[in-house]
Amino acid sequence: MSHPQSLGLQRLAGRSALVSGAARGIGLATARRLAAEGATVLLTDIRDDEGQAAAATIPGAAYAHLDVRREEDWATVVPSWVAQTGRLDVLVNNAGVTGFEDGVVAHDPATVSLAAWRAVMAVNAEGTLLG
Image 1 (tube, rainbow, N blue to C red):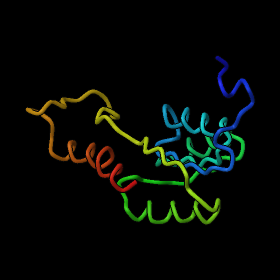
Image 2 (image 1 turned 90 degrees about the vertical axis):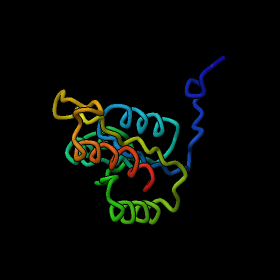
Image 3 (image 1 turned 60 degrees about the vertical axis):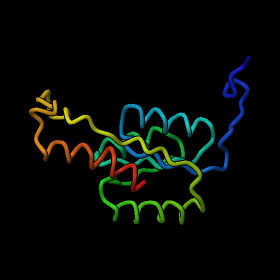
């Protein structure tokens, strides 16, 4: 069976997508795939330099700063994107952290700090809720 891309089909033509955590990794790969399928894609992240550079490699894509932990960022970015594209069809709530971004630290229940726990939950749980 042929893959839809090999047939030149663009299943998401005319659709608008927003991908959080899209400056690199899975988010960037997802943004590229959505664009390849025909979507107009907004890459978002807190790594602005990386996000802008990544968006520049995807035809028709754009970048916006979005800290998924901040309700006010969502309240600005989403309406702005909808105003620009006329719609939002796809949200890929990809942003996430492990708590090990600054190196390996004790993160088990007996040694993790409440602040470290809250930092992970703010992105992974609250960021998802806000999206």
